[in-house]
Length: 306
Image 1 (tube, one colour):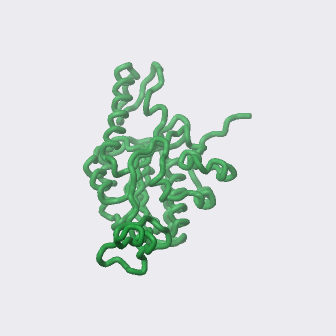
Image 2: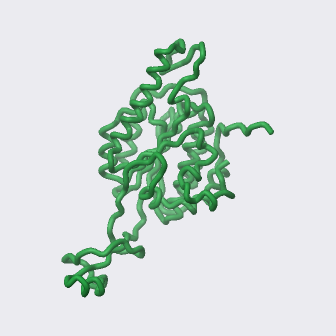
Image 3: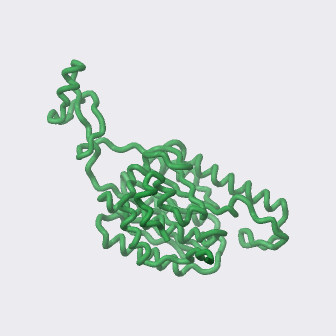
């Protein structure tokens, strides 16, 4: 049996079909739980909701109806029960759909980015959150403000599919393009957003911007990588790097690997201990759900991403 060729584009039907498996994805668990290759944490905001969070000392202004009388009697001072905030949080996705994301020896990073955005967007809607986001292309960006409900998200997915299908030959990013797009994206973010960035982050330099975002928002950066990001093949050939054709020398091998490692370190340092980092390789393309949710492997076996 011949191997299945990796997808070069996505369809709206495919992205809509991710709605079912996404119902098993909890953004709260994703942001709080342990992920392979993930770092950092996101704290929830206290509030009055349906899910119990903790018992703490009673403070002036607390609703006396939530006093925990058993703990109060045992400890000799007033304690109150605190619950998770019950509100619709904005979830803002930044999805890279520049032609540079077609780079990949095993799968298209652009296709992976679109699938991830759909999967996480549907998960947010299942959690009753508002969803919107930014799609960055070679021609510019498209923004849809986070709102509740499926219709607007479907409109955003349709635009994502259009952007993905219009990808042509790989072109180097315009210097500073990714940094400018992230800055424009940040200016539009509603307060208290959960922010998810999906890109390979090549040519990323806006370290201070990411630091500010990680302090202000719950932030997850998903870096899409390929084995060729780490090491170029041992070939006697000409390659194009940043728009210039060069011989594939040993020095180029070394500078390529070192440059990628440095960019990844820069991103992780910018996220710090507040933001979260997750690397997904094109090797994981057929197992995105299992990679995101290793504990749900058996539950999702019938709904694998294709």
